[in-house]
Structures are given as structure tokens and as C-alpha cells.
Length: 397
Image (cartoon, rainbow, N blue to C red; front, side, top):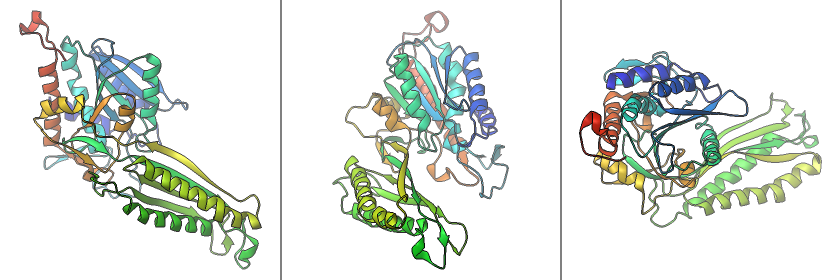
């Protein structure tokens, strides 16, 4: 089974599914493998027609199923110095190198390798495979997939998100809210700056105010926060604008994010920035150029995964792995979207997040083997095997 998994992973890595590009070839490959073992496969394309979510079912088409979830997209390799071709998987020293091996095609490969095993069992509780697009740019595909399931009237009850916490059981993580704030000013000659509105200068003031609010968040840390760091974080990812030294910049934009530990922190940041723009920055800009503007686009507001006292997904994975402790992580996943749709959710997949998004990304082979063992236990201990072929007692997934 491990060789089958690595062979599938090699194929998956060869699909360069960077978020800016189509994932359709990889989704077609996955669909064919699942259809070959009898799964009911449905594809849901985005509005552009260039990307698709896949949702497949082995077992009866009823509510209460268990979802094995992964995202098909990967981050870019541009400006990264790789020792090998990032889209050709290489095995070395017990590791499998290639873009997406860790985040998170390794889990997808393991799930696909196990699909025939689930198909050969007469399971009464369905196993679903959910593979999405655009997780890396705001979990866009997962939101669309939940809407598709609602339209179908299908309600799975449990989800295992195969992101890479080294197969630890993760029951909570922060949210991830991403924004782009755009500044429109008035171009002019640098020798007389009062005749223009320098969008870059106002963007810098905006960032300075945002960083001041960032420091205040430390004092708003909730008691007993389980995260590291325990407060809501803010990060400015990019500030771009202007053209040359002696031209007043008419346009600029800031890409920024926050990772809230509580909803009130997100509202605090947004309301404070809104007031700062409306009361201070915009009046100054529009005094010179009335058409000046500051507009914030929401790339994505992905809620965190909230630990809950009762969690069937956590109990199932405890049983499958032998773990008896669930933790939290600071990085975000699609888990909150699944939880908000009514499912019990945990994050548990092979590899370390420390390897994700970097040059020479890899997943350790022993991590893949442990992931397979978890999924094999799922099939062996919770599936009803046919009495006519196995002769064993009835066991229900």
C-alpha cells in the first residue's frame, strides 16, 4: 500500500496546481481513480470553469458520513531555490521532495490509495472524499463546496482535514482574515508634492496605524488562550505603489492579514481602521483631490476551528491512532468552514507544517506510512465486511 501511495503522490506532484492556475487535470486524474473503484464522483466548477471541487462517495448516499478532506492547490515556486525540479518528486534519505508533498498531496495520495479498500467493504456509513481548489488564497473552494453540499441536501457529520501536523490530533486553530487595501491619489511631479496626493505616503500611514493596533492586541489576550502566541496576530505581507523616484504615486495597495483568537478582536481592528480612514486619512486626501479613495477588499475571512467538549471526529481519530490528547496550532485550514456547516472536525495528516511553502518541501516516508495505518484502521475497525466474503462479525463504520 505504501508503494501505491508514493506512486500516486508522484503523479499528483507532477500536476503544477499553483493557486493561480487550473487544477482540472489533477481533479480529472483523481476522479478517474475514484470512479475506477466504484465511487460516485461529482465535480463542481468555479465561475471561470478553470477550477473544480471534487466530492466523491463510497457507500450509501445518506447523511452522517465521514469526510476525508484535502486541497488540490499549492503555493508558487517562483524565486525559491530548489535543489531539484519542484514538480518532479524525488526520494532521498527517507523523504519525498516536491511541491505539495507535505501541503497536502501526501494525505490525498494516502486517501486515494485506500479508496479501493473502502469500496470492497460493504460500509453502512459513507466515506466521502472532498478535494478543493484555492485553499492557499482564502479557502475559496471549501466555501463553495459547502454551498454545493447544501444544495444537494447532503449532510456529512464528521471530517478529517489532512493538513500536516505530523499526525497529531488538532482540535483548534486561529481564524485567518486576509485583505487588500487600495489607495487612489493624484499623480504629480515630485518637485511640488502639495499639488498631488501621494498614495504611497497614505498607505504607509495606514500601515503604521495598523501596527499600532497590532500592539494593543497583546493586551486583549483572552484568559487561558491555548494558542502560541496566545493573542490575535497581524501581518503586513506587501506594500506596493509608485513608479519612479520623481513622480508622486497615484496608486498603492497593502496586503495584510490577521489571525483572530476571538471574534471581538477582528471587529476591533476593522472598526478602528474604518474610523481612521474616514475621520483622518480620507479628508486629508480629498481636500486636494476629491476623487481620492481608500477601499478594502476582503480576500477571505476564514473562521478558526473552535475546540468543543463533544467531538466525534476527535474520538474517532483517537481510536485510530492511539492518541489521547488533542492540541491546537496557529496556522489556518479549511476546518472552520466544515465545522460551521455542522460537522465535527479535526485536523490530522502526514508531514510537518515546518516544511510547507518552502523550497525543497518534503514529506517523510514514515509519516505517509503512519497516515496509511490510520486509514487502514478506519477501514478495518469501522467498516462492515461482507459475511459472504470474509465470514466475520458485522462491523459498522
